[in-house]
Length: 374
Image (cartoon, rainbow, N blue to C red; front, top):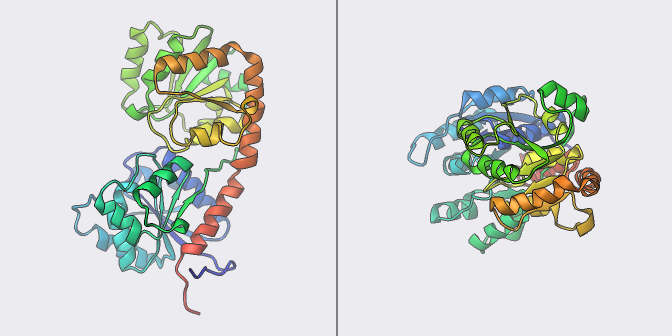
């Protein structure tokens, strides 16, 4: 494959079809902003005004481009026209369920497609998606090795060099408060062990599992940071378990970093993820992580790490009892938390720096982008 010369800046189009602002949208906005800071021209097309508004705070040029479901006959035409007007070199697709019209529209506009897979459940299980990823999508990027393995199983004929694992990267902003300052600013207990769930409160994040685990472990306070359709249900669940005084709900925070700085432990209680952003953010601040066995957790917390130097723990199953048992040990062994804290910082610095992440994405986009005639 002919590669774009390293000195030429790219015109990068990206699309997000999500109805809400969440971790995937934050991650791709950070990536696009970093690419833009290197001199590339970026246009972030979005389905929803809410996502456009939030993405614009990263300094990105944003445009409305509504891509409907598979039966939306004119979506591919709209995509082709938008890419041609922007004169894109490459299209980065960020929402799996919008791949059909985005890929077909890009093909019509002669723009190569890179698919960024955000969830472990975003798999080409049926003939339509298998055809798209074999024949139309030029390159597929996942963040976790287990997701890559599933793609190779489902697409055995796809060339090896068209599927790539790029682990997520993170950069810590300046001005992060100390633990004591963060707790005071958020009205959280200034003493004791604080265990947190930081997520959009939807069913897949399993806040109920987090609450049940905290309820079984004395000597700690739980804090749920975020908002969403499950919040009322979770508050009622905590009240039903008699834990409403031990589980604090902060609501949505525009800046989650102070909440992470306030924690002694972060819990990822989800049913599905793909290398959760919040896991890396917490680790960058030296906060150990306890995670269910979701995609990406093994890569971040276990893979290639000596058992005595791991930055957290991954449970063997998804049961609240298993989560509570692991939480019990981490809460009541301060020396273990201290070792994990230092290991967490080192792990992010060595394997998940933002600079390395952007370097790899930039190289991939150059390799895939169309080569213009002199």
